[in-house]
Amino acid sequence: MRPPIPFRKLFLPLVLILTAGCASTPKPPAYSLYDHDALAVLPFQNLTQDPGLAQELQDAFLARLVQLNAVPVIEGGRVSALVAREDADPASLQHDAAARAAIARQLESDVLLVGSVTSYSEGLSEGSPRRVKVAFSSDRYRWGFYENRTVQVMASIKLIDTATGRILWVKNAQGSSGRRHWVALPYDGDKESPPSEGWSAYLAARSEVDLGYTSPAADARAKRDRVPPGHAKGQSSQPVINIHINNSQSQQQSQTQTARAAASAGDSAANPALLHRTDPVFSALRANALQRAAAYLVSDFQGRGGWKPGMQVDEES
Image 1: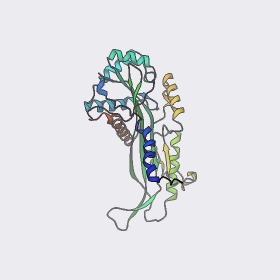
Image 2: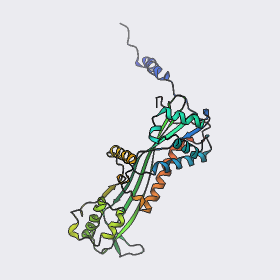
Image 3: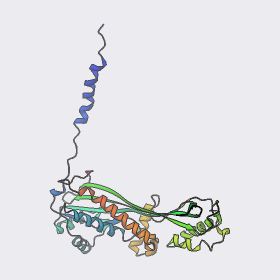
């Protein structure tokens, strides 16, 4: 009877057989933007209910792209003027290859970049009241809470070959910014238990944000001493209140459809009151989030001796 073959003698041939298929899989070639004559950035599509957001992100993106001086970019004003003259809108340019080709011919550009702002949200939340020691004092305390503001922008861009209509590259980006600050409650800091009546009054005022307040934190602070404790609606035990103002993931699609319908009908009432319009802190956070999103979108254009994006797809636009 023939003795069994040792496992170690079988192991190497088995590994070679299993890895042969992997070795034959071709890798996608590195794509260089320098193979093209000029890049035109078309107007970004706005899928949020903040009407100026797409233009602001596009301006920030273009400014960073031109500043790099790494690729030939057609001047943005010239592109915008031609798009307006052709009566094309950003939504149609995302999908209409013929319209893109017509614009590309007039711009003498063989590669186009289209973008979309897909989501925008502003968040305002308060933490539970807490008792903290007053600075530079060993025996004095005060009651207050932290108020948190957050802004998030999500966007995507596509690079399209105008001759073939093929999408050469896709990139998604998220820009976010936040700030936390202390809000003092004007109640006796010597008491070790939370000021339940005052906190309930504050939360009651904050609950009225949904009724149309444009600056909820300021309105709540102004009302907290005037709202009777009996109107607290049992909110004193609620540790955190979250207010998300625009595009939550579950509502984004329906809000996008509403925004498109409102834009076509000229209905400005469909756009909700966004906090950055009345709150300078939210305005600054919004600007910061836009810059971060733009910086991430343009990051793959930076000095590599030839532009090599991280993802290449092969599909018709």
